[in-house]
Length: 402
Image (cartoon, rainbow, N blue to C red; front, side, top):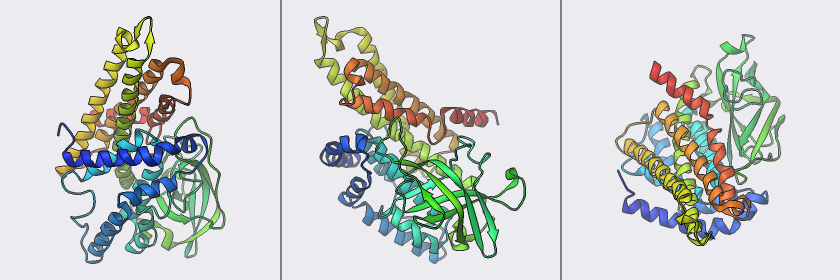
């Protein structure tokens, strides 16, 4: 695959039109006015029939599972170009508001998908469908104040058995959708009096308003303002086994987490492409119209070098996205190492391109009225969340040396 198909371009144009009509007019409110993004996301789902698609796919999958089949082959996202149809909207939304993609992706792609991959049929019917249709907002809570990239090793949140129930305690931070989540997947360790390093990792589903479960207001951040982030505090939250995903303590969590990390990291490449495309587009237009020393700045070699590097990075990231689509169409899953390499490169160059766009715009680029200022702030977090650059390097190197 070396270019988008006609079908992909039709989806791209439709989403771009939606963004221009429904998202750009709200940019100030979303980025600087503390307006939650969920109404816009729900309108996006409704416009493109995504909720109906999710319901139909969910019904097929549940019917297949009840019939004893592991997976329905006609599930959404399978087949030629299925992944492409999911990545194109990510790219287009990120050309305006990357935070919308983060808020949407965590709710459906992490919280919803975790329940779908680890939950019982009853748990999927109880919680997952509302997340996949975006009727409810989901959060995926793993990071803690003292853990950062060492999410499992330094995890302090615990679940303690108490009769037929569990008692949950602990805190989580940097949780996307945390302040507004209706449903939260809470990841913790089973405390049986054994050392923390030996404890099993479990995941529970929590609902807003449960006694002892506190969701803080949105935190102030450098960027991604349209994606609310908060802290969670659990103090003796009592839950039944029906809230333990899979209703078993004996299913290792780390393998499932690797799959989630791979999906999240490949998604960062698509997000990066949207940021790069828009920054390059804006920079080219500005380089043509801004005159300094008697000629447009685009005629100065130093500006040309910046634009050329932007285009080089755009092509490389686009090819990584095409590779993702090709592998999916061939029925091959992206390995964690491949996803880490994609994420590492894409996040770095998206940040570089956004900062260079600010440089091309000069003083204007530093002003919030100009889009490139927002992209410079938004792009930086791509090097931090879903695993820092340093974590990606470690993962890639370990795989090479194994």
